[in-house]
Image (cartoon, rainbow, N blue to C red; front, side, top):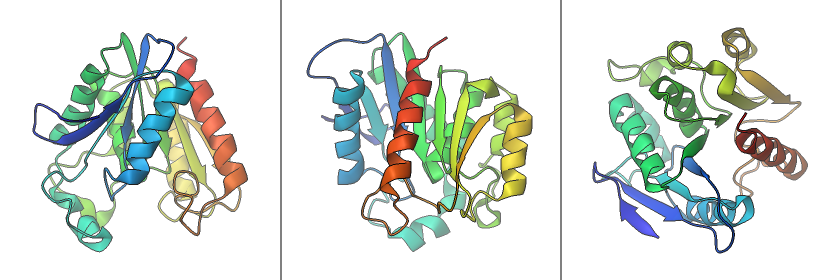
Length: 220
């Protein structure tokens, strides 16, 4: 079901067709934002994990931009707006506890959401660990700094060993901060969430989803 967050950002929320849960989930999409891939993901996760799930557009009012244009405009994104939308999405789930997961740029914002202290569990799929040089601005805080403002031990980072967006030295920063990291050998960026991508690895994706589900559902 489509809706809008208090900021005006487009969002989609689904609730399970059967069963109930005290846990909700927010999904932050990759750089291309809210589209059929994530609409289907929200619906599937809601039914399979039996919880309300909400996702939202990363680039509100700029949905027409292609991937190159979105990357070029990344420095204009404001952490306060993105994390504010994530927290508002959490409220829409009407759940006592809410977990969050994100992909690519959404994975970077998943790291940053730790500082909000709103989410019980965090799963970042190949999120940038340091803000890329071209994206830096006064509105973009560093993920590692945000991790230090909250509970980094609540974070699971899923990365690929061949992903240039998450180099080994940056992964070391995550581990030093207390993040649990799972690295998939020979996997490149985006190997989990989009079966249409050349980088997709079905077996690794299935395993990564299983680990993410276990992480989210273990609320201790």
